[in-house]
Length: 272
Image 1 (spheres, helix red, strand yellow):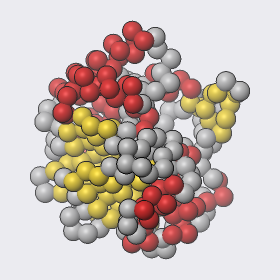
Image 2 (image 1 turned 45 degrees about the horizontal axis):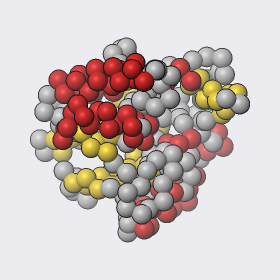
Image 3 (image 1 turned 135 degrees about the vertical axis):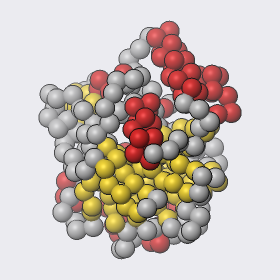
Image 4 (image 1 turned 45 degrees about the vertical axis):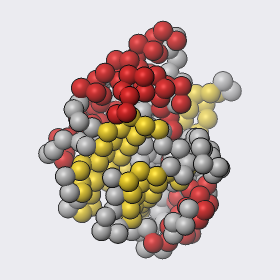
């Protein structure tokens, strides 16, 4: 398996970067998956720079209903005419972020909800024998405090992230979890993934939503230290994080987790 970061908040290889996420996944048998599409067109532009032909993508996943993960949906529909695009049943519900200037809409473009290429998923969707999606994660273990700023489907209702889904891919003896922002909490998502897959996770690719947490420096450090140690306790699992984890927060995790965790920027490639 080869995972390439097409859109991410940072860049260390000279590619343009923007707040958001898009990963291209090439399986050993040649199938291609696009996981998230960033804000607009950057994922497609960087794919072209990296000689990745998105027209050949076999399936696409939008991890949740926020613009920085599904804002590129229109661009993908123009580029690719064969891939089924998998979203949560709740992905097109309105979503908002509380900013200094007030409530801002951060949802998907509702005009695309009836485009005919979309597959709307419930709490568990098996795409193939080795590919599945799941949502409806419960639990409060290390729940991201930054979620306090996110609302929907009404501007007065705190988001319960029922629109968030994660991807499990099994390949040989590897079980790989992909989670966009892990708004439900990465530990809770990993627990559900293990139950769904019926086997231990070997790799996790995920934003962990540690930014904009509203914590004091001391509180943030304590939170991240606890999370890092709990991630290490999950066993022989390799982590790749990005996007809403935040670079300073990642560096704190790195101090605790060492070579167990790495950061993926635009253009970075991981081969498993």
